[in-house]
Image (cartoon, rainbow, N blue to C red; front, side, top):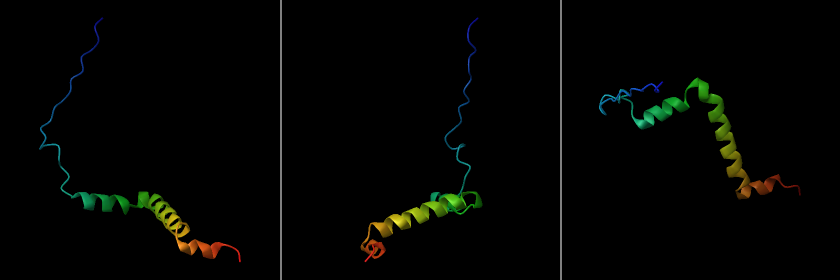
Length: 64
C-alpha cells in the first residue's frame, strides 16, 4: 500500500502578515504581559546582580 500524499497549502507572502504592530510594540507587549512577569523580574534581578558583582561595588561585600 503506497504512503499517503501530504498536501501543503502555499500562501502568498503578503497574506501572511496580519499583525499590524511593529517589532518594538510587539516585544513591549510580550514583556509586560502578566504571564511573563516572573521571568522578566528574574532576568532583571540576575542582570543587576551580575553587574554589581563585576563592578568595584562588590568590594563592599568583603569582610574587613
